[in-house]
Image (cartoon, rainbow, N blue to C red; front, side, top):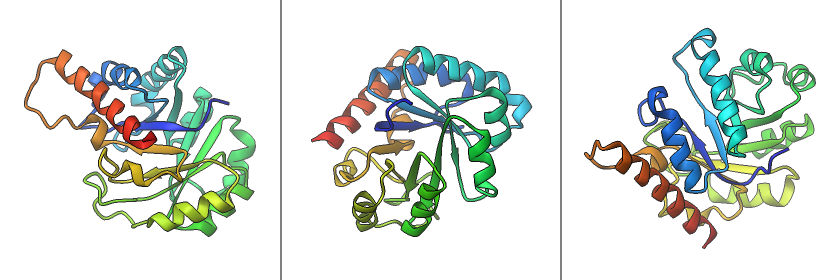
Length: 215
């Protein structure tokens, strides 16, 4: 099992579109990203099957953990390394745990009891958030920092923090093992359309996030 720690990149259909995902992901990995989740809420399984398989292979080559968001059947079919489940995907979790041999992460929002529940059901990690106000999910449930502290004391499995995390607030999340980011990694805040400059900025974004997380 790859180590569940460090900078956890999550794809976004607008900020890291499928047409750019391999070059953008490569740039993020150069900056220190160690986990990558492919998240696509719009396409059918059949439309992304080939891409998911290729992303898994790419991440294996780079020694990065590949995580597929939500799609349990596709995850089983392609035998991906890991899957992350939200609240709509955790029904019959025990059966899925028995069927899926890879890593399973579960969103627990601001609910420590829910995290304990899934730890007991043998989830491999749990995620808390949103930690801060997020442009991607502006209506997300708020999770205060004290939840992370308590989770670190009680849980035996790794903890992921997500939601509105950037280089200015990431230092507040010392109790998290993994830091999941979207906008602060892929959002370039620039009108520069030159691809090499975009990729360089992604690498720098990742480095800045990691530097501030570890400082």
